[in-house]
Length: 282
Image 1 (cartoon, rainbow, N blue to C red):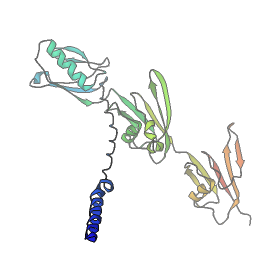
Image 2: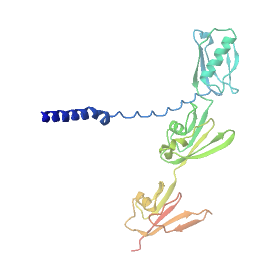
Image 3: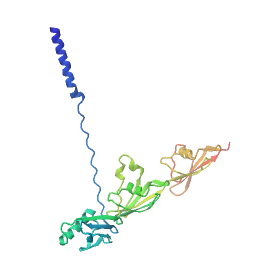
Image 4: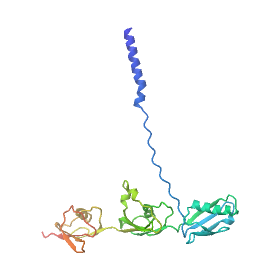
């Protein structure tokens, strides 16, 4: 009898442990914190030269396609000259609707403004891009990478660095930006907003020149941190008559004079360096 009671007590303990197990073995995971919401893009603001279409619901006689003048105005039926320059599309619709309402022309007019051509806010992309030219900034949040993409991207002969010039707060603005670095962690902070009148310049790629006893002499792109050994490898290596002891680098100094050095294979090259590989005498 005592054995049965002991067995029953042991069984009760086991059942209690099994019942309690899910409480600690399968504890619900803490909910993941939601990703921070991205700020909405600012609405495009109308500028001089923009072509807009204005329509009023059930009033086709008030429909109009026109270009915003240099002083930011349009001539609209019943209202005359209306200033739309500097306004967002939503604000422009509200200004026209308020004018029709306050003039007792219509009651609760439903005005729609559509931008047909963006000419009031533009930026230039010049230099080593696939489609250089002047491009409209169709949103107020157009960033440097957006504009470079619109221009077809950097051409094969282009540099990794771009220069952006313009004005900010009435003062001249110039910034040199490392394009590949924008795609590294934290690099998006330097992906600047492009403003009306900005000029983006993409210079040609930096070059070094190699000649003498190498397989493929000529100019080559200077990659970041490229060493003498890497440059020789890019040139196909030395010929059978070339010698490492006869390698010289011609480099222009700060004063404009050319200096001739005999660097180590691990030394880094600079833009414009000329590498000469001499012929072995033996």
